Image 1: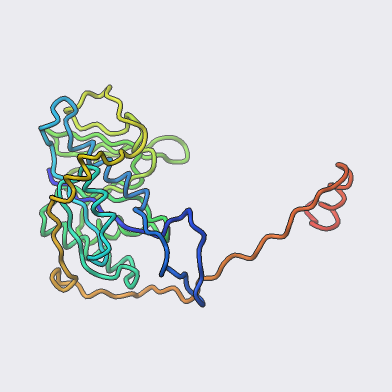
Image 2: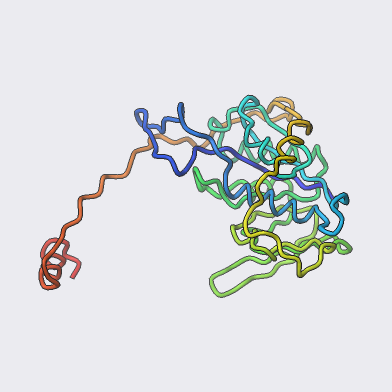
Length: 273
């Protein structure tokens, strides 16, 4: 099986935002991998590896990123985690909308003749939650959204995907090839089963860290670079951000001397009672 995983770099969400006019100033931000993409790569690696035989690989894992080719550190990090090779579409992803990104991903999926696309359920910078659904529509493939568990039926060429809903867990069988977006619970120790690694095997909680050997090996792994033109896609931005503003500053809190004084303020000033 060949698994394609999309990965993205985002401004570090732990840093304070800086504004330049009506936009976010990214000139000096620290770029980090999107956390949900780490979960997606971890899911792919659990499907691909046989814990009983480290030399046996059940699937090839390819990471794909739409980004400037000279800003690929996040791709190297995912290769160091264990992905087999990378694909970069050399373009400014911030100048595109989700529709154009989805078209690029769909084209790479077709050209690589992949069996499965795994996507983080959203990107932490925009939280738009669009790409997986758009790609599934473009490729006319079945999809499982917000996967919390995943089991690979190797003989039946299908995935069993569990997803949390309001009243419990919904289970779907998704034939391959398909598209799956993953939620944060997919990286719990027993959330992914590949039909070869024993079902009672427990992985570490969360996405794995790159080992020293993985970091060294990442530098030797192949990374193909394409342009949107190579893929026959003309990037557009039907959706643009007209303005980004910081939220209003919160007023300082007040200390009161008694419960009665608190009730009075809530009633007369806040008017919530």
